Structures are given as C-alpha cells and as structure tokens.
Image (cartoon, rainbow, N blue to C red; front, side):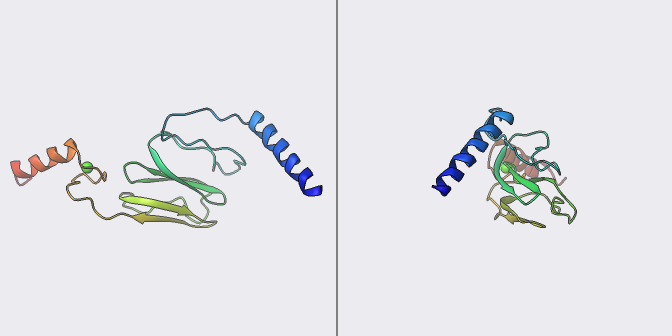
Length: 134
Ligand SMILES: [Ca+2]
C-alpha cells in the first residue's frame, strides 16, 4: 500500500513538472533538456542542432555532433567541459561526476575533410590534391 502511494505521488510530481516545464518539440538532432539548471547543464548552447548522441554528467552535459565534435556545457570546475583539441573524429561519449570521456573513431577511407562522411566535398579536396602541390 505504501509503495503504491509513492508511485502515485511520483507520477503526480512528474505531471506537475511536465506542466510547469513544457519541452518544445524540436527538429531531429535537437536536444531537449530540463530539470535542475543551477550550473546551466540544461541550457544547450546554440546552435542546438545536428546532435547524434548525448550524455549527462552530475552537473554538466555533453553532446556529440554529426561532424564528430563534442559540445560540453554546465559545471566546469574540473575542466570536464573543456574538450581537448583536436575536437574532431569522436564517435561516442560519456559523462561522469567530475570527468568526461570521448571515444575517437577510426579514420573513414576517402574522408579527406574529417567529417566521417564520404561525399562531394571530399571529391573536391581529392581534385585539389591533384591540381598542384599547394
Ligand atoms: Ca568527408
């Protein structure tokens, strides 16, 4: 009986929270963040688009962009939001209390601009490589 009451209370709190903090529907790749925002961990930096993965630390947040870069925001007292250079070629991420992790991917054959996709932009770079030594 007591545990049932807690579930009902939790559900009621969730409904109230949802009503007080509506989350606007965004486009694919946008992050919706809500909850305690004391250190800005729910304030997604602009542009809020092109994310393919996210991770939530204790008081900071991480987002992996489709271009392989990581965006970090929120509490940064221990440098957990300072993504080491080069901020590129990441394929996965994780966030702990005082730290963050990023997994680098293997180079993609034919990807000359480092965006982990082989497309016309890479072909243009390939042509430029044959056009001259510069
Ligand atoms: Ca490319």
